[in-house]
Length: 257
Image 1 (tube, rainbow, N blue to C red):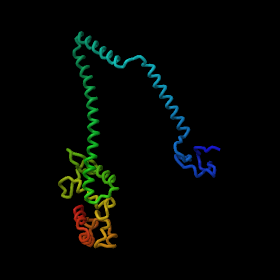
Image 2: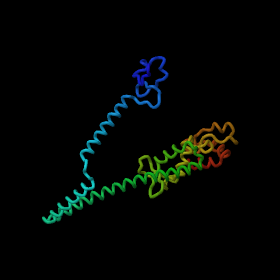
Image 3: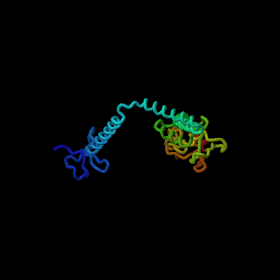
Image 4: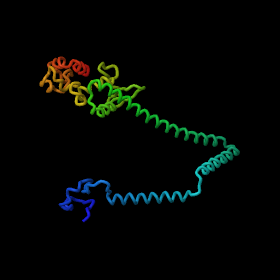
């Protein structure tokens, strides 16, 4: 007996064939490559037939008609009508008609240019912000697998303003300031904050997590991931351990606090 492609419920599948079916979209389908549901195939075939019919009807309707000649005739008709209005002294109407046509063409070109500009700006923004944050984060021990995460986070904060990446608050309008509370936050400052706030994105000796097993030994591997220099997680003992085992990391965490 041939295998059935689809069963509505699992109970309808013969016991000896149950391992051959997988659940998908509320039903059970034969787990095989290169097979399409007959219903969907029939729908696609019907759609293609209807589309082909519409194309044939359109071709028959415009059979023997040259689009270029049609456009030329339309332009000639418009020219003759304009000349007639000029003879009748309707100069104002002719000027308004010409301006209306020109304005429509200008707006069409402007929309095209604006769309291309916006697309290029978006791409340039992504490239510059991605490159900037990757460069800064790599220096701080960014994990290679964390590249998509760190760049996605940066794009929600930074925008390109006059060719420079500038940080904004969640409202997208208010500028986010750096540690001094005066100048806008830089990519480097933002990355420093990520070292403390998202240590899983960085190697263990680059964030506020476990320090290298040098002077810290086993105890160092159990160190809290919190930044010991931050006000909400201030820990003098951890600061001293960190300064002894990894001075560079201690400096970064202190700066990020």
